[in-house]
Image (cartoon, rainbow over all chains, first blue to last red):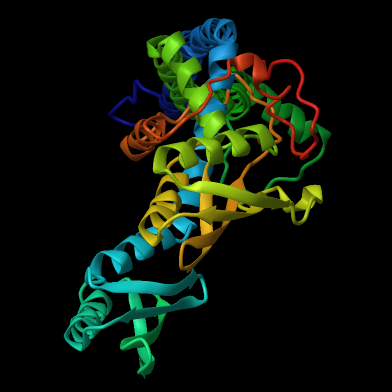
Length: 178
Length: 250
């Protein structure tokens, strides 16, 4: 017979281990259920309290307020349309009257305009007078108009003639519009 | 719980063994089942809710921007003075009519003639392409007029200068001066109102400073007559060059 007695049997140790595993499993299941339920409820509440409906409601109110001002809105759009179109037309239209003003402004008083044609294609003008020095000044001023004021380009003096009968010089100049 | 099994040992999966396994692990079934159910809840409930949260956040952002835009529109509209807006529209509609404005053109020529002291002789109209396809986009239909004038070169040039600053808007495309007479080719523009439905939800862009200064500029142009809003075309959606002009755009 053995001298020592084993009071704890291997069966009981095994049983305790099994019970410990069971306790851990139960506690884990409880904790997971608690956490999952908590997260689900939290996210649900957060989704529920999002201000989406309130924003949409405010949108509807603002839209109904704007609907009252529909006439003004229509007028505003028409103004915008007219302004945009006017801006386009003004930007693209030729400023021939400015060119005519500029040309007439440089003609010395002792010279007179025989003819002047200004169009999109170009300028052609004929000036007559008794003074050659005035003619020379006119040519200088036309060059200035071309080089400094950027109104015309490709200035060509087509003809300078003298009418002996009337003692009149006549100059014919052509140019392109910039 | 009393039946212990050595898991390292190979076992035969037959009915008796299954019963034995069940009896051994039956206490674990509930916790394991709960954990599996929790995982299913996470997959089928929690994740979709989280996804919905993020979707809602982006939706809220969009709706908030829309609301802000609407509030800005409303604030802008309420800040506009009724009389000013009506007056601006009337002025702009005189400056750029929605259709051919023969009366306005003749009035403008007479006005500039009187202002510059240039006598106006014959003039002839030319209407160009009248098909409605020519009126959309950035195409600007026009009425061309050749005007015979009598006056010195300076006054004829002055006439050309004034006519482009007179309502309706015009462009001088040719100036011919010979001695004491001359002729001008002038295009008077018009533009039908755009074919668009004005929705309350369309965002309003405030007029820029250049647009406001343009309104101020054209308001200072020569104007013979002022017509009220009743003379404006029937709807903003009109795109034809038709002569009929009844009702209000609103």
